[in-house]
Length: 148
Image 1 (cartoon, rainbow, N blue to C red):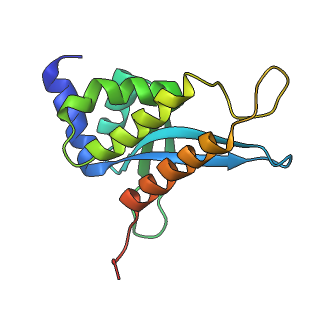
Image 2 (image 1 turned 180 degrees about the horizontal axis):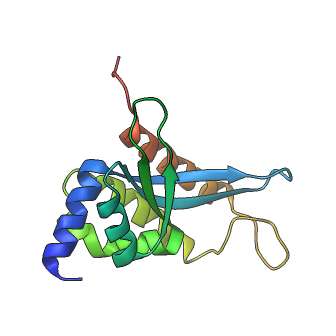
Image 3 (image 1 turned 60 degrees about the vertical axis):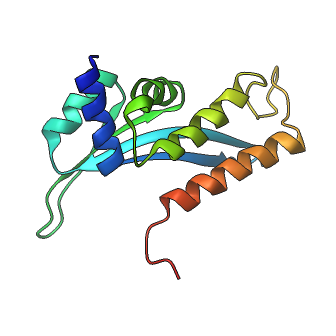
């Protein structure tokens, strides 16, 4: 990717994108976290351009009533982190979101997955607290609506 494409992509993320952390649990009470980068819009050309350039997946949400069809592009975990590192210098609005996501991921390299599955260790209470802090910070940044 050249600088112009990376800057253009960062502008799309700043304006139409979402950088997020999410938490998943399962029936055994185990929890895991992941990073996601998403863009949703009605312009399918941009969405397919993002997929061609950076990989990921596309979900098509069919229109209802007078609404247009919406196209969602997303990256998860390692692909999302690699993508954020590429566009990071060009981000303006979502730079702090990227900071949180990259800080979150930097802790992951040192401890593996959080699930207590054969061959993997359980997270410490401090690690869980750090992940919950990052998750809540990201939720505050991504909150929609009127602030009371």
